[in-house]
Image (cartoon, rainbow, N blue to C red; front, side, top):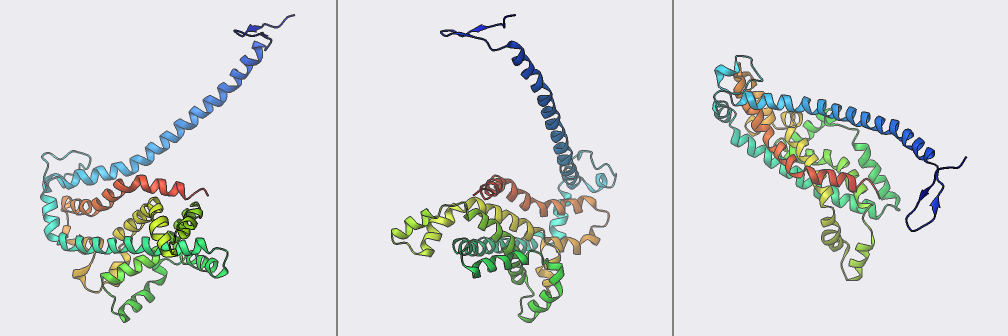
Length: 306
C-alpha cells in the first residue's frame, strides 16, 4: 500500500500522510470549541457585572431629571417626561452646593498632590537603596501601616487633631495623605524597579545631582503610575464620609458627602432632589476617572513586570 503524496512546486514529492493532518484538525476542534465557550461565559459575566453598575446609574439620572410629581409615581426606569432641572436647583440651594463643592475639591486636590509627591520621593529613596537594611525596614513599616484603617485609629486621630488645632479641612487632607502613602509607595516602588538605573547614571555623569536626576529624569517617566496613584487618591478622598464627619468640627466646613447626609432628612419624599444631589456629587469623580482611566491601566501593567 502506497501512501498518498503531494508534490511541492519546484521541489520533490512529500510523503506526509493526509490522515495525520486530518487527525490533528479533528483534535483541534474540541479545544477551539472549549475556548469559544469560555469566551462566551466571560462575556456574559462581564455583561452582568456591567448591568449592576449601569442600571443604578441610569435610575439616578432618570430620577434626577424628573419633576416632583413624576418622582413619587415609583416608575424609576421610565424616562422623564418632560425633563426638569427642578431637583438640581433645589439641591443646589438646600445644600449650599458651591461652598461644599469648593471645600471637597480643595481637600481632594491637596490629597492627590501630596500623595503623589511624598510617595514618589519615598519610593525612589527605597528602590535605589534597597540593599541597605534601614530602607528595607522603612518599606516594611509602610506596608504594615496598610493594615491599620482609619476606623481602628479614629478616636486617637480625633483627639490628636483637636489638640493641634487641625479639626478642619486641612487636618482631613493631611490624614488622607498619610493613609494613602502606604499603598501608593507600594505601587511606585514596583514601578521604579522596572526603570533602568543607567538613565540616572548618565545624568550624574553629566553633572546632575540626585535631586536633579529624580525631578528631571525619573519623575517624568513615572507619569503613568502617578496617574494611577492620583485617581486612587482622588476617589478615596472625594467619597470619604467617616473621616470628615469625625474630624471637622464646624458643620459649615463639611464636605459634600457629609452635607448630603446632614440634609437627607430635609429631602423627605423629594426623590428627584435626592438623586440630583447624588448626581452632582458623583460627577467630578466620574469625569476624573473617564479622563485618566487609560493611564491608570497602563500604569498598573507597566509596574507589574520588571
